[in-house]
Length: 129
Length: 150
Image 1 (cartoon, each protein chain N blue to C red):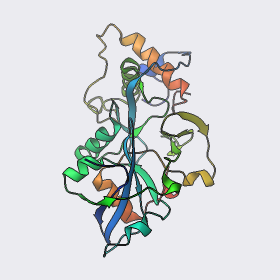
Image 2 (cartoon, rainbow over the protein chains, first blue to last red; image 1 turned 90 degrees about the horizontal axis):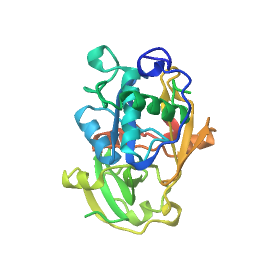
Image 3 (cartoon, chains in turn purple, green; image 1 turned 180 degrees about the vertical axis):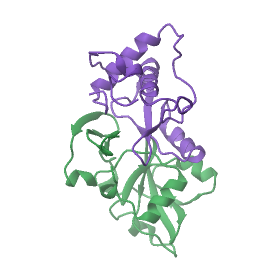
Image 4 (cartoon, chains in turn orange, cyan; image 1 turned 90 degrees about the vertical axis):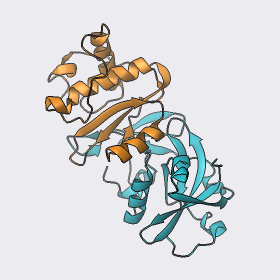
């Protein structure tokens, strides 16, 4: 967890920035008071998801700029990279997320991680510039 | 069924605050302009809606109405100065600094990267969607975008 290149999803080297494919899905993030990322997710309805997270978990979410109205596959790719970058809570990470977006056993896993990192690099996401 | 121009009241610590529903923008939802002040007695709404917007935020108006946490006051025209949605600022907090290092602007359709923003630009609304609890809390706190810690 931490810097891109330190481990997990962020260990792929020399990733080229890439633009997302268009779609209806948005990637969002929740940052805690301590500055740590506490949730990452994807949705087609930010309004409803934001209200649900506030009501159920008490967390505020923010759509990630540059990752709005993108394809479901690209959104899931970014989500999985950020899950691995920050770590699931059950694995001593900072996230409240319970499960991965893309399982390691999924045939598209490796390609999706690379794609997700490229998209994060394109938007100069902290840790992926 | 909510209509553009609807004004709603919401109970806050020092009375009732008022907001006007202005537009639905996908994927964020219903955009409201929160009007200044909180009132023990119902103010003159036609005068109130002419005031500059206190802050803009996305808020699930329909759901809040169904939950009876807001009350419809009536349908009013949207004053010229607030007829067009504003340009919002948005960004991801860098865990290393606790601040947004790269700001983006969003006009409801397109986003574009800005980087650092000026003191004047800190008055721009911040893109976000709140529920009733957070809306009430922020109104009680006197929250304004220029005071946001990001």
